[in-house]
Amino acid sequence: VLTPLSTLYFPDWGGSTIDSVHAFTISYTMSGDRDLDRHMDQSEVTVNANIGGVFEGGEVYFNGQRDSILQDKENTVVVHSPGMALMHAGQHFHGAKPLSSGERHNLVMWMRSSSFESSPAQRFTSECAASGTGSSGIEEYPNAHLAATDTASVFRRREELK
Image 1: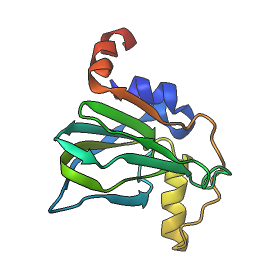
Image 2 (image 1 turned 30 degrees about the horizontal axis):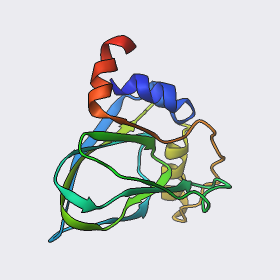
Image 3 (image 1 turned 180 degrees about the horizontal axis):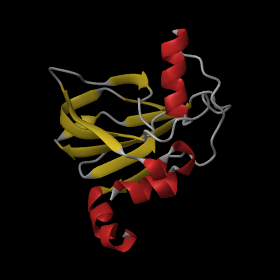
Image 4 (image 1 turned 30 degrees about the vertical axis):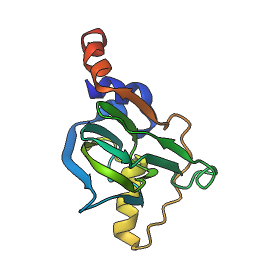
């Protein structure tokens, strides 16, 4: 289900050659983690699905892609409702605003490609490890945008995409 979507939306980020997924859950609660600082993922493509909870606040925000001329100009905020999945390039800066009440649970999938050696995520990881600086000079990729859908639509379209 995810590979056809990553192929369509993220061709410049190895979306068609995904061969492994690292999946984990994260919970936001009033007594635990309430937010998540701005960061990038160690993936070519990330899927973040809200799998439940009753909450207020906790919006997901996006602030541009690494080394893009628009990196500091983008300010996209998404209300991440239960049942909604967000798909984005791993090198798209993002975070979660503070939860103001309740709890939210998410399933995050870092989609990776071992054959896509020259992907921005791979170069970023390799150069960070080699230099210790975190600087990579990754160029801007016009097709590395944010895709959002509800999970029910993804599964309904599954048969059509085969």
